[in-house]
Image 1 (spheres, rainbow, N blue to C red):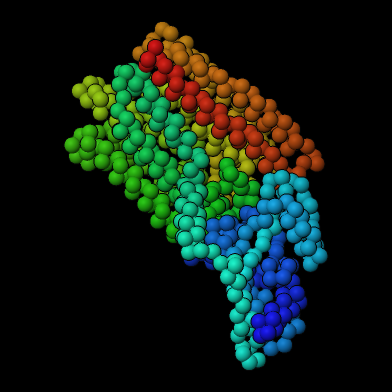
Image 2 (image 1 turned 120 degrees about the horizontal axis):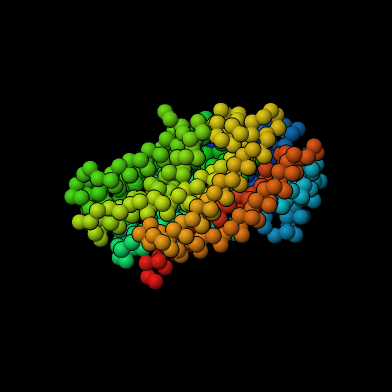
Length: 503
């Protein structure tokens, strides 16, 4: 009987209100927001944009707390709700949530109906299932009453597993792991060139070299997030996507700037340990003066000072060059040197073929950064980040992207011309290259597709009635195509040198 009376009091208050305060938290980074809601019994539904801080935090930690205090209540009356929130995936349930939320407020109807936002999964509907509801009436007796929902509680094992997996996923997101192909390609290419030259290979040192390079890449990404937060570059970037604008973990409240900084330090410390250990194994001392030591120092410096003080290379138009060097010759040479010292320590290091082979990969990885800079243009210009896209396109209120896109086209054509020449040279000078590298011309099909898409996009951008808030997202197919071009060219170059070594 008492429980039924409590249920009625809770439901009366839920039905009377339409705004609640929602609190979320990840790793000690708390967030709170007032949101419109409707309730179906004790379950609560609301609408928000998926990139918002609260939505991002719910994906990592679904445990939430809410406060409902309807207007017009005398005294101190409120509901304090603890529960789990999740995004509604079922289309029918989402449509029902939309209809009911619109009965509460039509403030977001334009956004809810926007096909562009729906297509790009910007809008979302969420459900909160309570585990405990605390009814507070400060001037009654009792002042506090609790209703528990054991059916909504998660088991201890499920909670532990879920939190562990989400935490691991968060750290991988901050590292931007899907882009590690930019590291795997030059490392594997340097090793493949060595195999082409010698016909031998040291697998343990290859895997150690690859691990060190991936950690260096991860450290660079995390340090980049920290530095771009300090300069507000990522804060003011409203056109972020999977390919630009950073990982967003700081902006989403998933990591504090301090946590990101410590994470970057830990990653670079791991790289340094691996590099020094390799140097000690190959030369007898951690700090033995060797090409590997200097290559490692160069790589770490490029990674740290890409966005960090005092050089901030990417803020002065040198970021593209830093990326080309780091994810081209530096990684290829480092791997090639380690293989040489492991297998043929008494022979002279024949490094020119590794540098020559890495040039196409270096240009293509630099162009990934370059084409991604189109979406970053507004934010970069606002914080004084003078990338080459900003320098070339900054012509007033509306960016003139024709100039940087011409640079992109010319650069990519030069890259494939270089590959053609490299393959032809392989027929006559096998000590320099292998004719099998001509396989890397096949992805030119992707290049034509990407350039055509980019030119169509430029036409839209130049039109008088262009929606320049949404158009940058329509360039994403070009971003994807170019990343695919870099990867396939790299893989086919690796295959070309490998085939040259066995045939």
